[in-house]
Amino acid sequence: MTTQYGSYGSERRSSGTFFVVLLSLILGAAALAVFLRHATTGIFARAATAITGRTTTFDTSVPAVVQRIQRLNRLETVVYSIDTVVEGSKSSTVLPDLLAGDRLLLVVHGQSIAGIDLSQLKPEDVRIDNNGQSIHVTLPASQLFVTTLDNQHTRVYARSTGLLVPVDQNLESDTRAKAEQQLQQSALADGILDTARKNGRATITTLLYSLGFHQVDVT
Image (cartoon, rainbow, N blue to C red; front, side, top):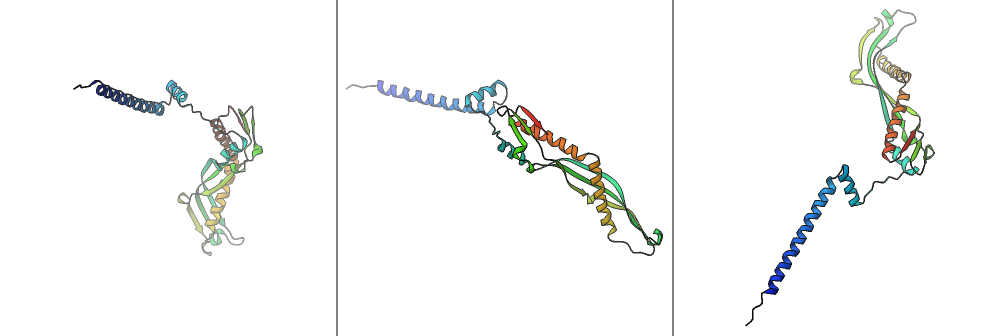
């Protein structure tokens, strides 16, 4: 009788080597995945980029740029707030106010909001030169979008009514409308539209640089 041991021992060693190699590959892949996920700065980030071979690209054609800007839609860039006192009154052409007048003082808090409606941007307003390196954008005119009163902080401070007339129910609403007009005029006089355009240009300039342009001109 002859007993053979060599073949069985060799198979065990081969199996053990295979599992060691497999385990090493799994651990190596896991380590590489962790490295690529967390290597975000410096030389490690450059090494990770070289390994993955991924680069960030942007579509900088005119239609794509116009679409990206238009997505901002109504860009509100400045809010003008004011606190003031507005007077509303009605008088008689015959009798003195003591008898037929109606007067109130309204403490007003309100705001005007201005910006640029970027949905009005047209393809001809965007020019890209130097093989996509530089861009010039002409923005639509800035607008005063809305003027509103803050009802929680707007109130009647004082009111006096003549002895011979009833309280005019419409005087307060008329005075509020007058206050909105005055607020709007004050905002325009203080240059809210110029400020809105300046802030809008800064916002769009930042956006265009983020898209990869090297030279940006926004007017």
